[in-house]
Image: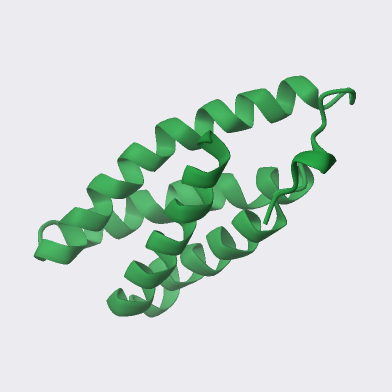
Length: 106
């Protein structure tokens, strides 16, 4: 979990952190919509493709900025979306990622 004590506010990466936080909030909406599509069996291929793209974007940036748990979950989610197509696992990871992103918004 991300610790407030580790915030980058005094770092040259502070602007990148703020941009990441804004991106994470906006991407969470899309991820929720995609999760709903998977849950209802609608457009599952399109939904997993969108999830994979967002997860891929989040992976490296999150880890670079110290959001390690988000990066690890996103990496595993990307893998399952692009490789295994294991929808129960995708859903579990997706909601775990959404929990982590929601915690950032607080």
